[in-house]
Amino acid sequence: MRIGNFLCLILLCTSAVLAQSGEPLEIRGKTFSGQIINGENVREFEGDVFIVQGAVRINCDRAIQYLNKNEAELIGKVVVVQDSIIIRTERGYYYGNTKIAYSKVGVSLTDGHVQLNSKNGFYYFDEKRSFFYDNVTLQDNISDMKADRLTYYDDNDKAVAAGNVQVSDTASTIFADSLIHFRQTKITNAFNNVRIYNPTNRLAIFGNVLEDDGIKNYSKVTGKPFLIRIDTTNTGALDTLLISAQQMESFDDSTKKMIVKDSVKIIRHNFVSVNELTIFHQKNDYLQTYRRESDQSSPVIWNENTQLVGDTINITLKDNRLAKIEMRYESSIITPNKDSVYRFDQLSGRNINMFFDDGDLSRTEVDGNVLSIYYMYEEDTPNGLLKSSSERAKIFFDNMKVIDVHFYGKPVSEYHPENEITGKEKDFTIPTFRIFSNKPKKENLLLSRKDVLAYLIKDSKYYAEKLNPKK
Image 1 (tube, rainbow, N blue to C red):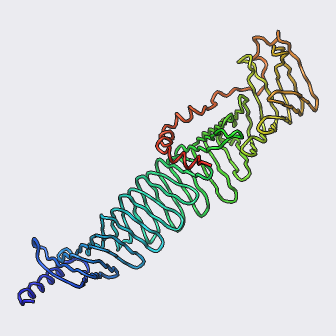
Image 2: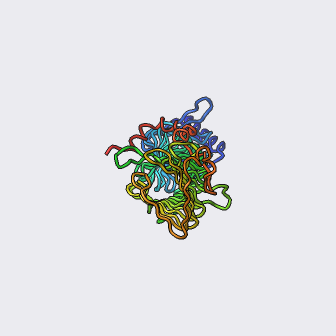
Image 3: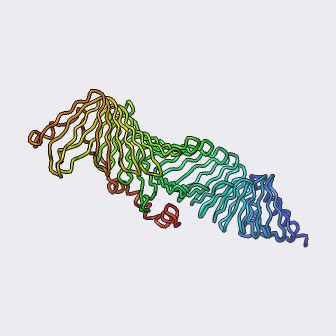
């Protein structure tokens, strides 16, 4: 090396150290050269390049160091290490003054717990924080996450993702516009356009906010949540369950229950309900809905065309079919008559129990202050009505028609011939008579949630494959 070049190199290095605001980079390699380009002091290293700055260690095939800026361009099999953090890329950049590493040609990061990959990424060593964007994936031993952008905080094991977020584990997949996940505490919060798919249960839930606690096996969806579950009838036909409300809570622990609150609408085949609180005990196939003190009206259920009302209504299912309905306090059953919009078969009592065989009503038992109004027919010709009262009653059905009625405890019956009731049907009602006109329809419920329809169309392939898999 000539003396002039040697002095130039000394001056170049000295000026670089003086210009640096951070700890200077220490670099070595098999070959080395230096020059000044547009006033910038540049050194180039090739072959087993090794760079050190404090606790940061970098290996690569080639490095171009900009001394004045205290920066280096890293080329070929780049590995950046600090403590448990390992970053790999084929080409990147390291800013020594701010201790930031960057790549835009594909980058991966691991801290021993998670694997983070993306097309572009920054890592902030002083903050132990990474920001990756463009096709980001994050994996741990439990779940996989995808997003357009993701910030990961190593010390807090916290991931903040945004843009087409998708999180999958062995049980379900969550989609959202943005999401915050804490790996250690297993707490996840998702926001806007939230969709939760559970292919095993053929279940999909839509909402705007999700709060999930993986340790407690608890989750809550708010922002007009909407639930869809695909089932089949005994004939193999699709039987879709729809539930809309203001809040849904799920307990996937030993209780295995779901609590649905506020403006609840439930539709499934011929079963429809409107109420303010429904508790579904999934483990026992048991559904409970009751009137809270703040509620203005009691829960209402429609089975076929029959309207059921009670302060508390308990429903037992067997093989996804009705087995028993229990109504407690101020209970009533009202069925419209086929011959007149003003004729209704009516039954009320303190408590009413309805029993079903293979989904068809077989027996109804009423206890306490029984009142009934039943329209009579003779070969399909209207023939007056029978008005009865007692302490208890049993009504037996066959093929959805009354075949026998037993009254117990001071029974009283009054027959009213047809000429007394024609045109005066409204005079023959029980004291608690009320027809609710807010029975929701499946098509209207779906049309009122265009966001749900849009997502079903957008995810039609996923929906078909995951929620209704081929057997």
